[in-house]
Length: 367
Image 1 (spheres, one colour):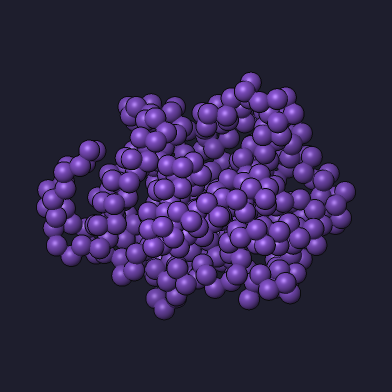
Image 2 (tube, one colour):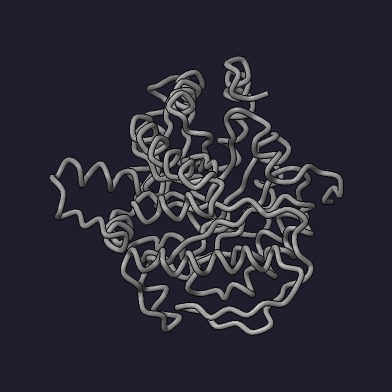
């Protein structure tokens, strides 16, 4: 049951110097594109069980993937999905401490609907709700809605108005009218309002995305290939946020593979890759604008590997000590947290809780 006295999401997420959580627990395959043993098979029993396991371990955040169709290929990864707001409501009611996010594709959801859904889940969660605002880039999904895919910067111009309206609905106790480029609203109001503005995440790393993050988000949920890249992005986002009087943290994600030693971890990681769906990974890359033919063969292969094993994120592979070392390097680069995938999720969490968390606590990354 949800506790009515639990700290609100902003406090829970800053309780530790380095936040931890799970990503992609609401979609088939999770954040991997593999048929390796333990690959995530979506069911309510599985997703709620792992969410409660993460909650019991004291992890901080669960972020779902908003997908309306999969990436085709041999496995059609993410082809089976739970809608994120209803998923978040159910998970919030099943947990007591962890922050639960919903991911919203701005073009597919009216701000009035998002404000109401968010307030509802926030009430269920006792303040442990976060909104992951996504601008919409996967054109086959938008085609299903009959929505034209906007040019990159136009997505963020739309998102700026969209998020501004969500914020206004969360804050306003009186009806208001709005006439903008994308929305017309008359007498708009949404009650009940969340007592405190929910945490807002966004993954934009382009100039337009960083500007959106600086104006609207509390966390930039970045796709990183290295700790060094993270350091550069943290610097850019920090400067942009400070210019408008705000503070934004950067988090990233990837699959965690823990072995008895490095060789064992690499073997497990290679199994994920060997059973991967390269066609689906290439489809994902294509719709993100990462055409493999635009890169040298070695770079293209590395990108494909990251999409198969970690949804484009940064895989963390090694013994417990090495996993702790890699997470420590991210922390030292200024990255504030890491959201994990696993094959399987629950087995990875068992080892992470027993072997890695104590090391992170010794290093001062966890309280």
